Length: 125
Image 1 (cartoon, rainbow, N blue to C red):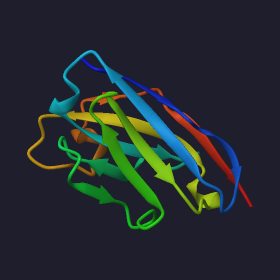
Image 2 (cartoon, rainbow, N blue to C red; image 1 turned 135 degrees about the vertical axis):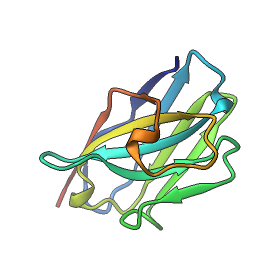
Image 3 (cartoon, helix red, strand yellow; image 1 turned 60 degrees about the vertical axis):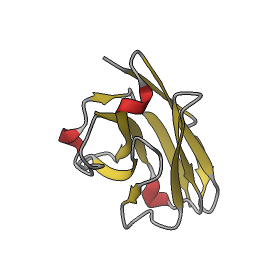
Image 4 (spheres, one colour; image 1 turned 60 degrees about the horizontal axis):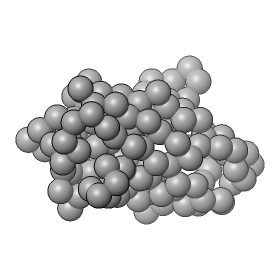
């Protein structure tokens, strides 16, 4: 089992930047592809970004492409989500997730094996 702890959420203005972190512990970090999802009130949880086990391959939702960057630091067992040019519609609880030894990086939440508790991001206009 792997434990995931997100941090870095907060309240910002539209156009601001924010970086989320997700610290992993408990298992070999390199065995997991990592993803970020978000869930706004009254909406389904949606895919935001994912990064492969090596960190080389990434995938983004169209809504964040060009504004968000996912990365991972093997030495720190941490995955990051750099969010720039934030919009009010980015307001949500952001969740980090881990997918054990995947054949490819996934965009569907049910493919992920472990989840963090979430961190709130609020963007005001």
